[in-house]
Length: 290
Image (cartoon, rainbow, N blue to C red; front, side, top):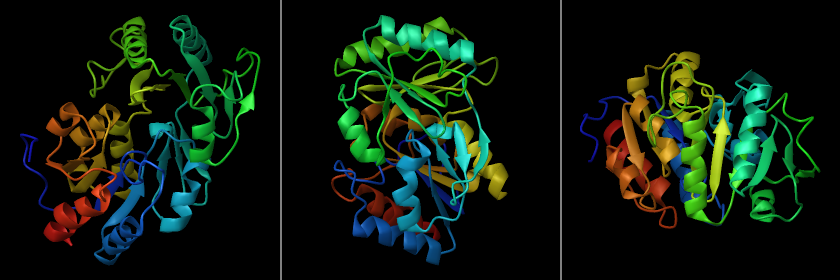
């Protein structure tokens, strides 16, 4: 156990990140993971997911796992019912979206723009586009410019395989909105925000409405489901999962996460290539609370 605060003595809901956590490197939901979710249900513990993915990119998981609780797409920019009707949206203001696109472009990263339903890219087979299409199970729309697409933005992504460049772009985006974004990696400010900017993968910089962060996801799910936050468990692998660790009663980091992320969790499970999700459910939740 790493988190200095003691874990909760009761768990009523588990909220899981998707990529790097619930699914394997090949984006596969294993049989053990499916069985672990069923065991949670049998134990009376609710389960849902939050991800930087768009809603359609979560559909296979929602259907396969027969989820009933609200899900949080785009890290909380869009909350949906399992039938995909929208509960609420937290979008980027148009002027802010325009400036974010300028900043990311000036760093030489590719820019992707997501609305609640559509995905826009400048190049059909640009960096990571094909893999993202395979992951989310729908195709992007290629556009020459984003100029007329910034009035309904759920998320903007900066993409590059130059990981140091992505990190610099993250820091500069945060600096541009100084005092209005994350105070430091994994923590978010509570007031006066304009954007939330954090890497969801080393090669992806996600920029969203400040309420579209995973700490806010826990707050809203707590309200929606009338479950106290200290009865919520969370599991994830990236720095953008740390805010939900800090808002929940029990937190679990994946074995494939960085040491920094692991240090902010109560427990560390095995990696996503070694049934880390299923092991976490069985060892840290069902054994204690099931």
